[in-house]
Image (cartoon, helix red, strand yellow):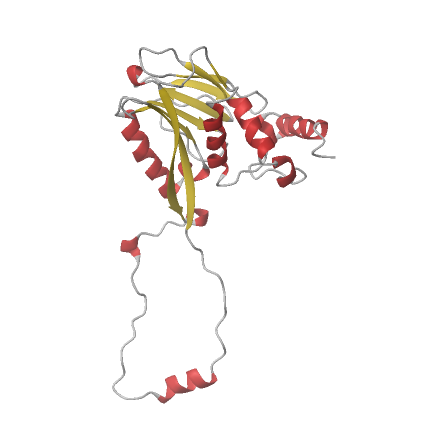
Amino acid sequence: MSISMFTKHHPHEGSSIALALKKSTRDAPFRTDTKLRPKYIVRLARRFVTEMPHDVDILAGDIYPDISMIAPDRPSKVAESVVAYGSPPLQMATVMPARVPHVTVEIRDVANRELVTAIEVLSPTNKRGEGRREYLDKRQRILCSMAHLIEIDLLRSGQRVPMQKPLPPASYFVFLSRAERRSMVEIWPIQLSMRLPVISVPLLADDPEVTLDLQLALDTVYDALNYDLSLDYTCPPEIPLDGELAAWTNDCLRNAGLMH
């Protein structure tokens, strides 16, 4: 399965991929002669971001009444007639904020429990509105620390992480910021038709880095959560594909038996 098999995105998919990455630290996608154990432990740090659907951002300071109700000096016959004879109100659902989980894979040293490497799988809420502002604040704290940061962006929409120069055109990106080389960042641009790369995962200075097979991690998620049954590949993707890329994607889906 290639990355193109994901034609739609669910806001919780980033959490699922993060869970697979945590499992990967014990299984095949992490390949190294020196295992993470017993010097390192892997933990999931879960946090929640409250997001308004369709990017409807409402701040507490912006909420004030448009109409005030004042007690009348004497009873109003007009008001009584409205209550008695007015038509019943409509019943409609309002837009409610949703609590979206975000999971970070953290590699910590056993001795001091200090964060060594953070792996972030970006979700739609990381790339827009209040969720993006919250994520950039957290990102800045990591970049100002001695921890390494890996950011995996498998979303074609939304804003990319900030860079000093424009990124090359690509569907997806993986970013690696090594603590000792900031502000330089290692970047993997990934086209839709490409297999996800095997990336480096740095540890403490005295230890050799390990490698992570992202395609194998994504395949693990896809198979474990039965995305071939839950995704309707007969529907067009939410972010349209054009021309040769759309034709190539349809050929891949037909060859996989997911589209006729």
